[in-house]
Image (tube, rainbow, N blue to C red; front, side, top):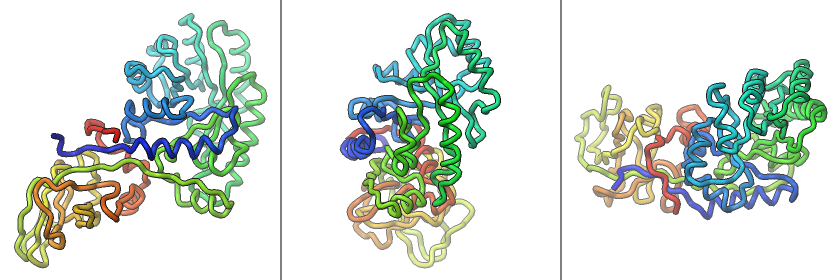
Length: 368
């Protein structure tokens, strides 16, 4: 038996995909980002389920992620959004992948390989990460006019400020720039919409949307939620990840004694402590020390002392029925209560994305 595991609700995942399918025209593809171990939810487990329940394409960041999906028997179109070293580009055609391109070296190497490959040109519209600037576009147009094996299938961009704001004017500037640049290219698939854009702005959908965090039932930001409400739009998102562990020991710490490294918590009364066999190695952030809660028997138990590499201590003084091997929820719902990724993030000054993606990949993901 594992001492820590993640449960994935297939029904809730299916619900989220249906919500987004309903927003799209029948001509618009739904691609889902499964990079970063499917935002911590389990790469292969989620990708297989998504491919069977409405996802037209799957998006990964790294080549090794695409290799894992193909090895698992997934035949869906896979788009590699991150950089692929020149020495590995031969695998793009071998694995029947699509790949992002934004530098001439990548395209020249793909042409040298001599195998047909479909690429999507990333256009720089204001995020200043990957992408071809507008003044450099003629160089790429000339190259594509003379390639035999490299096929320009798509054009893409990424919004810089569409999630964390109520003012979407910069995003609309990016959209206009994208349209202007993409219209110069002869491509089948234009795509720029992330989760927030997909929900808020149908004009960003084009031929495909790239759904990220919201496929996993989480909001990109509170501002996106407010913007949706202000626009009179409604999408019901259902988080479907529950991270669990068990109680390994229960002991009483007398009043006045300390709990954990650094003596950071001193018992103000006799404290009944549950020892949980999970820690920051597993992805439970050390910053949650002395401020987070876990759920035991449907009740909140405060984390006492520092989160250790492999152990967390929780105060179950007010949960007298708690016992060894009780199930513990670190993230998710139990009984009538829930600890969300947003709440965990707020306690340590980060975002829901980071909370779930940092759950150690070695921990089993179980579809329920």
